[in-house]
Structures are given as structure tokens and as C-alpha cells.
Image 1 (cartoon, helix red, strand yellow):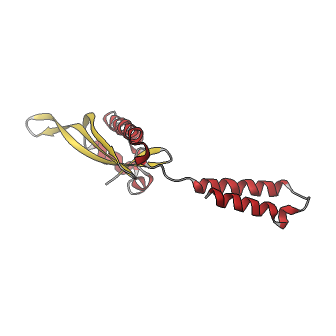
Image 2 (cartoon, one colour; image 1 turned 180 degrees about the horizontal axis):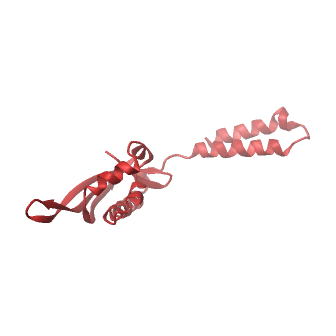
Image 3 (tube, helix red, strand yellow; image 1 turned 60 degrees about the horizontal axis):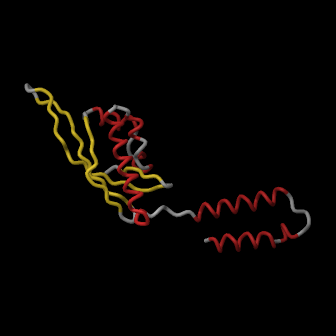
Length: 159
């Protein structure tokens, strides 16, 4: 891709538009814009398999932070951890309504394992629930999550 960028810039600099001595700031701006656009296109998604320890630590921290936001009833903060496609299928209002029905109390991350494209996290979340005529009880539940990388950050995939 870098070779393509180099060839395009070389071609543009040799073209009749820029060959004459009337090089204008507009032409230089055009070259800069094309160069930036091509460099942006060269960026690829980070591969989680390249540095598993880094990505696993990042997923562990973000998963813990997201659940802590839910425990603290900061639903808008927790909602931001979803990937963009996940947010498109669920509005903040819908998410908040769903999350108000559960009462997470504590969270601990059991495992995080990353592959080439995604990380799988297993967490233990202690939920509080009401039992009719008995009262509130707490129960630890395993929660499996899938996280994906985007722009050097990880986001939760809603399933």
C-alpha cells in the first residue's frame, strides 16, 4: 500500500497540473489530502494475536470497568463499551431499561483469551434478586463476553 501511495504521489507531481512553474497552494493541498487519505486507508485493524498479553489485559480492565459502571448504575457509561454495530441495534434507553431489571453487586474476571480477531472473557458477576416471601438473595453467575478491537481499543459485542 505504501508503494501505491508513493506511485500516486509521484504521478501527481509529474502530471501536467503540477509540472509547470505555477504550482499553487491548492495543488499542494490536493496532494496533502490525497496522501492523508491513502495513509488512512493503509491502516489495518490491530491483530490481537500479535500481542495477546496486551489485549488480554485491556479486555480484563474494560470488562471490569463496564460492570462496575453497571453496579454503580451509570448506564450511559456502560453503554459506551459496546461496539458500534451493537449500539446500532440497541438504544441507550432500551439498554438502561434492561439493566435496571438486574442488580449486579460484584464482578471478578475469571479468564480472558484472545485470538486473531476477538477476545473471549468469562466473568463471575454476583447478582441480587428477590425471592417472594423470603427477601433478597445473591447468586454468582458466570457471564461470557466477546470483545473486538477497533482503533487500538476493545469493544463488547452484544449477543
